[in-house]
Amino acid sequence: MVDKITSLAEYFQKYQESVANPEGFWSNIAENYYWRKKWDRVLDWKFDGDGAPDVKWFVNGKLNITENIFERNMFMRKDQTALIWEPNNPDEDTLKFTYEELFDKVKQFANALKSLGVEKGDRVAIYLPMVPELAIAMLACARIGAVHSIVFAGFSASALADRIHDAKSKILITSDGGFRGAKSIHLKNIADEALQSCPTVEKAVVLHRTNEEHINWVEGRDVWWHDLIENASTENKAEEMDAEDMLFILYTSGSTGKPKGVVHSTAGYMIYSEYTFKNVFQYSDGDVYWCTADIGWVTGHSYIIYGPLLAGATSIMFEGVPTWPDAGRFWDIVDKYKVTHFYTAPTAIRALVAQGDEWVKSHDLSSLKVLGTVGEPINEEAWRWYHSMIGKGKCPIVDTWWQTETGGIMISPLAGITPTKPSLATLPLPGIQPILVDPEGNELKGNSVEGILCIKFPWPGMLRTTYGDHQRCYNTYFSSYRGLYLTGDGAKRDEEGYYRIIGRIDDVINVSGHRIGTAEVEDAINQHPKVVESAVVGYPHDIKGAGIYAYVICEELTDREMAGIENEIRETVNKFIGPIAKPDKIQIVSGLPKTRSGKIMRRILRKIGEGDATNLGDTSTLLDPGIVDTIINGAKVEV
Ligand code: 6R9
Image (cartoon, rainbow, N blue to C red):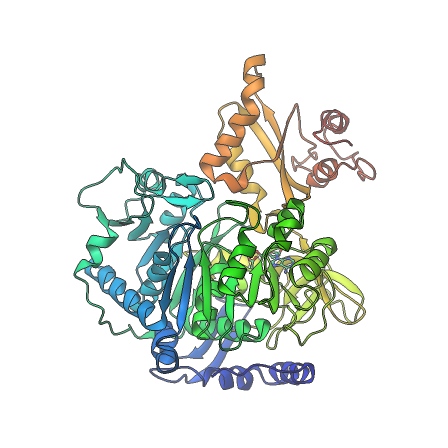
């Protein structure tokens, strides 16, 4: 069993150990796993130089992550509930899977995938709603050594197609549709549209979920999930994987261009996801843990599926949304399953604060022991409400900072152990060596400093590459400050050495905890035939944390066209990315503040979007300084 830290003194001691002797520290933890063959060396690494980044943990070790979820836990937990599934509609039946039942389903689907010709190393795209089959499909891929690439089911056909293309996925797993609150989304139609431009996909496996009446069917390509598993055996021996074999790809937005396929490897990710899960949440046997994320994001990968199931926990998977059928839904579920650990996003907390306290007060939340947040900075007001209204002042809050690229939580309190302060992610976990630098890359030493957050030593859960383009991985994360991993976040280290994450320093907007690249939104807006150019920035938004503000130059428009243009632009973004990237505010402008070299001065647009036209800085280098006043006058906020 992977041991948990149990006191603050022990945390400090482990932290020191992990810095003084990282290899010893992580190999001790790795001893707790089931290896087909032990590693020869614990770590080989370089962040700079030829071929960098080059990071290998547990060199030449052989294993399968599902053997560590199932076979390793089976003796103790055969009949324990592994996964509880709560449907979108509270009147529909809940499903529960013991470790043994889930194992059988995974093995069966693993065989089904094999029968379609899926082999070790093949990429499998998964585009499913939050149903148990999503968990089964991802684990079945891991079982046979196929690489899963899960695409959030809120993404559009074009975004799905881009991701399938980039990963050259051989199979797509989807469903007829998906339920979300009062809505039902016809996923198969979206998938069909995407597949028109995806020649690598040989088969599409389709799950029955919403029983859509009209299903478009491509003979020879499409196969029903239920038909596929009908004759599949539940006997399956796991594929032997190298420690560094790819486990999954997950796409995330960056500051430029198309999303990047972040690649995670097998052994390091396995060890890191379980270790962080157990330590941060202080999960104990018998606890019921619920992370409200969607498995389409990294939080769902690491903290609904891999971390909890490796740790032998009981994990809840929820298909629906916090406000349907009413704003008490989260608390209904907490009460229904006697949830002990609850992990959600600040944006959900703020949305529920806005609905009023009555929704909370009418439920029994006394089972709760630990609360968590992830995805964006939590403002003090939301933190205090979460602490007092949900946790009744007795539950520690773990404000967990991490990223798709880090694989697991990096900076966070350990629940009940690290003294917390509202809005601070507090201290690095053992094995994590953060460093703050100034824009020139000089280290900011000591406390009470603010700078760019980097990490100076490898940790097992870190990304290994960006799929199909290793140079891009280096350029994005390792080239700005040589020898350091650049997080893209700004942070402050306070007088006590606690970290407060301030937010992105690049052109990424964190909307409701989801990363949206401004360049991607601009590319989408520019697809509209009447659009000449656009510039997108974030602005403070009460619920979402950040909203999307788009400044758009159009060709000459008639009055009628003008009246419809905002909606059309939103629809265009919806089509090319999905609803999460739709701009909240669109301002049609006659020009953008550009320097003489043609660069858009986003700083100015950000200020205007924030409603602050003071201190716009030096605008004299602009090609047309007059444009600034014109934009201020037409702004969608009081400036
Ligand atoms: C896990 C996840 C990563 C970005 C990250 C940062 C922001 C995440 C945070 C936080 C402040 C926290 N972020 N957790 N900011 N406090 N506790 O969200 O991954 O979707 O890749 O986003 O989210 O800006 O760089 P991902």
